[in-house]
Image 1 (spheres, rainbow, N blue to C red):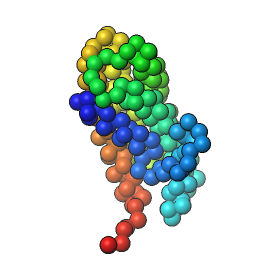
Image 2: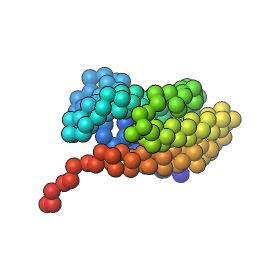
Image 3: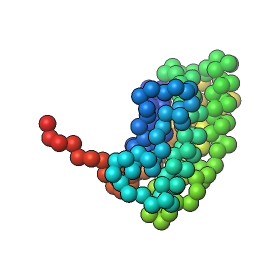
Image 4: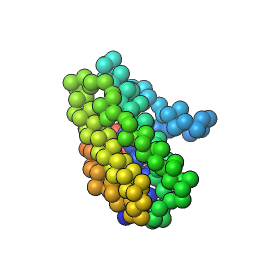
Length: 182
């Protein structure tokens, strides 16, 4: 499970804005949000038409997602691949990051226009599961449970499943360009 915990850290980071958010080649800030192109801008540059409500929703939802991914990336980075409890200084940082996630509102993004309602539903479902996972990890970590990473695992898997469904919905609505055969 520890290997899964580490591997999933990459998936969480990739969920920053779903399948479409490219990171600029050179980031000049330690803030990951600084390197992310707004979702609406990326889709428009890819040739998709968005009305103002769709663009506003996608960008606002992306901003909410970034609020979850930053602290979770911190948790995964600090927890590392080894099992057991982290040292006290690292544990304090992990606890602080988990508390940030738990304090977030999964429904914080504005209501989606009808055309994007399913995306919002899946995003809220994912974030709700992430909060439950963070709560499980936090409770176990604070209780001194050596196997604290397992305590939120089922909820984290549920979050990844919701993210997968969100990605599929995005690919259905905004299909990636077809690659020419080699």
